Amino acid sequence: MHTNKYLDMDLLRFTTAGSVDDGKSTLIGRLLFDSKSIFEDQLEAVESSSKRKGLDHIDLSLLTDGLKAEREQGITIDVAYRYFATPKRKFIIADTPGHIQYTRNMVTGASTANLAIILIDARKGVLEQTCRHSYIASLLKIPHLVVCINKMDLVDYKEEVFEKIVHDFDNFSSKLEVVDINYIPISALKGDNVVDKSKNMDWYHGQTLLYLLEHIHIGSDYNHIDCRFPVQYVIRPHSDEHHDYRGYAGRIAGGVFRVADKVKVLPGGFTSTIKTIDFFNQSLKEAYPPMSVTLTLSDDIDISRGDIIVRENNVPQLGQDIDMMMCWFNPKKMNPAGKYFLRHNTKEGKCMVKEVRYKVDINTMQRNETDKDVCMNDIARVLIRTTFPLCFDSYRKNRITGSVILMDEGTNETVAAGMIV
Image (tube, rainbow, N blue to C red; front, side, top):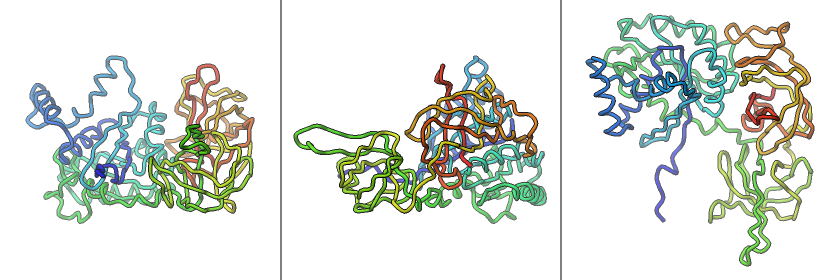
């Protein structure tokens, strides 16, 4: 059987954040260019465009900066996703805008990321925006941060400039919940330490950015301890061949499920054992995140979309009062006692806002308990009440079962994303 080698490769999702003109587009362009991930015709277009601008080098930012032109035409682009692959790994880049009015876009782009690249201009050092982006990365529990100190060519590749920024960022990040931080001095424009080792910074003995992206360990980013399987779809083929088949399809959100495991279905509370784990036309002995599989159980239990299959002795929290950190997405501010539509994994239903506890000033990380008006791009601690029991974990324990989105009942627009505390 012929399998595509790309299907078996690890996928790393990462997001880039930095203030305006820190060189995000150039960095992504450099990654794509030096890892030979762009097509000839794209390269030719960029080369001729660079010549038209009178530049003596290829302006790699043009590979991603189609966005700017599109903004000028009045089209808003939230997050641009770029895909590339090397022989070691596949990558999806979420390129998010740097301005404060795009906080919600950064939250969207970063919510599924394994890693965030925070860009710092070597001449400017740690800015308010650097702190804001890092705070959002820690709020979203992105497991790995890579701080790229860019434009080292403009500070003569001096080691002390790099060391000072590392020291400043270390001081600030001690307040954040980020476990793994790496620092790399780079020049995206000249290509130092992006894909190839820099000859200009022999004092730096660490890895290049691409090497780090290819080798950083992401297997343990998923929760492999707490078994969680939200049911997305019940499969009943009704064919002669599979007359009695009843399978539950979904994507594993946590833990390792094995055939013959004892499981419990929530919110009903019925128990059974796993009979088979099916994946396309093959049967598996075990499955783990982020695999999408179909489970069949030994007993005929009434299970529907939105139920969750867990281990008997390890169950999520069950409740209707949800305490969460929330980022508000909508231009209309939040109605303090408003009713909204809530989606959690595969379950949907109504909820109402019970209380706004405080807002967070994301530049200073201070709590504001007097101003309770939650407007677009605000981040607030909010208590909501659902009309149905919700099976959830804290976001810290599981990013999938610990997140919710709120929607406007009338327009169906997504108005907020929440991380359960």
